[in-house]
Length: 291
Image 1 (spheres, one colour):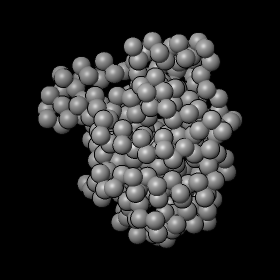
Image 2 (spheres, helix red, strand yellow):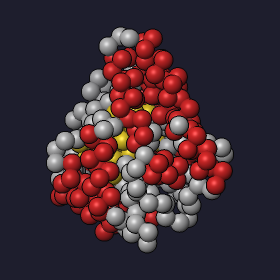
Image 3 (tube, helix red, strand yellow):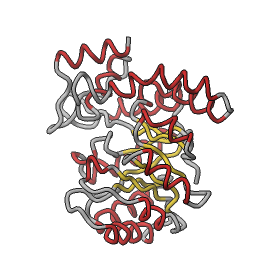
Image 4 (cartoon, one colour):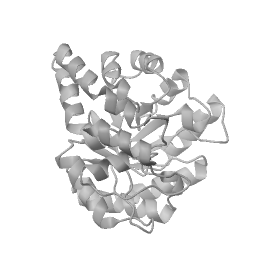
């Protein structure tokens, strides 16, 4: 399964009461596919505020987004949790719904060792026929999956990719030794071009909500051998890559990108507690950034 080069980790739209807005979700899916050139969408990942979504909300989102996309892009369900049994349950339910793949985050808070990580992901992959994408994000989980463990898991047939957020060094180590049909993505927008340069496959993006079409152009320029143009585009987009997380001080994702979408006329509401939206200074920074 090739999920493409540019995958957007989709926000979850909420209404004024903090409930999922299905009308806004429809508009967002169309916008991300048609205007921002997303080749796949991650539903209920970190950017989708998965920690605050119930299982019922997640499963309905998987089904709703799959139906709305209508085959125009791949749908990847965020079914990973810090419980192996719970992850297997959500993955099996997602498979029944008919998604194209699942994203499995490194277990958070309970901090398993490397063998525990291997057994966790092996068990989930063994419970489904769906393609599985690993997700290593140590800044959120408190533990980092090593390149060696990722490479070990890459030998399992339906573990087809990883979203790696530890470092470009780690991406390099994995890309240098993984099977040729195993794809390495970065989850850090600003590392997208570097990831391609060291043999990675693409980006699972937050900024793709706002500048996805330009990011797609950057990727295609690099793949066509026009490294100079790819570098120019990267430098132009870099302030947005960084600014959506540092506006002007760190703002938890997806608060900034949700506000940025509203400035583009895509109303997806605010975030659920314990996250909060940008304050006045942060909002002004985001407005200036987009301008």
